[in-house]
Amino acid sequence: MTKFNRLGGVAALVCGLSYVFGFVVLLAVLEPAGFMRPDRTAAETMALLTDQETLLSIWYLVIYVLNALALVVLVLALEARLSSGSTVAARLSMGLGLVWATLVLGAGMAANVGLGLAVEQGVADAARGAATWQTTELIENGIGGGNEIAGAAWILAVSLAGLAGGLPRLLCWFGLVISAGGFLTVTPLGDIAGAVFGLGFIVCFFWRGTFMVRQHPE
Image (cartoon, rainbow, N blue to C red; front, side, top):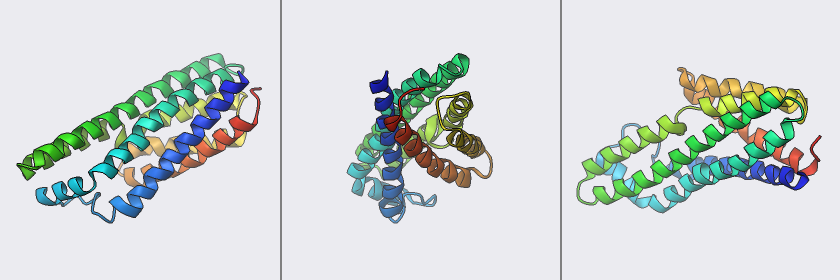
């Protein structure tokens, strides 16, 4: 159990690092290249996707696929740790966490498949390739990239379960605040709330990971 607890801590650190990687690549490379511009023409979209295809593929693999696989390990380790305090809350957190991991994994796989198809179609028809990419982004954002409801529900359940024992109380209260930010991503404050949620989750992942690596289950 101790080894699995520590493995869960390592998984939390991997999740945190994937978020850091995502923010760094977005701000340092993709944003300056116009990735977030809503007014790109079809030709500009295809030029961007073609030039950044390798980086985008790696980016999606890290922020979605790697994150989701590590998240599964973390979710299971937390359930084992938190079940000593509140079995019902721990199982609820596990269920919600696995749902979130599934959505994150699906978003990443859809993004990479859509990216390859869009680039392929864009060689002959820029408008068709750009339309495929627009559809891909819609699917990706709908599954998990554009709102954080599933993640907010998971961190809410983990925090409530952790208050019954198994995690630092301050971390749990911080998690409750972060979960509120996640729920707000479906409101007009979505962009700001999403940034707060993502940055706050980095802190949560590193805090929780460090704690689990260093501490034995209670």
